[in-house]
Structures are given as C-alpha cells and as structure tokens.
Length: 66
Image 1 (cartoon, rainbow, N blue to C red):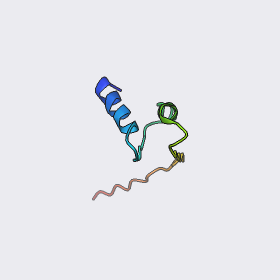
Image 2: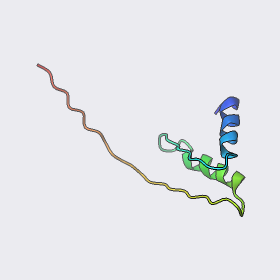
Image 3: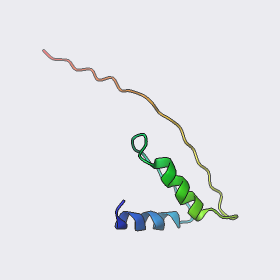
Image 4: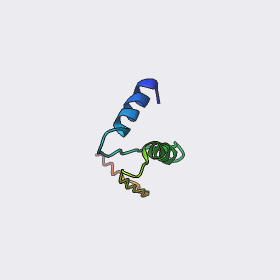
C-alpha cells in the first residue's frame, strides 16, 4: 500500500459509518490488515460487526468452436 492509499484508508476508518470490502489471494494479509485497522478505531462507543466467509468456488468455462 503506497502512502496515498494508506492515508485514504485511515480517512475512511475515521468516518462515522460505512463498509470496507477486502479481497485478495490466500496469504495476502487481508485479515491481518482489517484486524489491525479495527484495533485502531475500537472504543466503547462504536458498534463493530465483522463477517468472514470463505467462498471457494470454481467457475466452469464452456468453450465451443465450429
């Protein structure tokens, strides 16, 4: 994450409401990044809800030729 992206991420974390969707390959640090961010904003006033699910699906491609 470059400096501009980091500053934008910090700004978004400070907003009073919203949602952050993080995607990426296995082992890329998605969970670590989000939990670090949550620890930065966690206080007795905020209501924080997290959902983590695995969507391991494969798409079948059908290629037809004549």
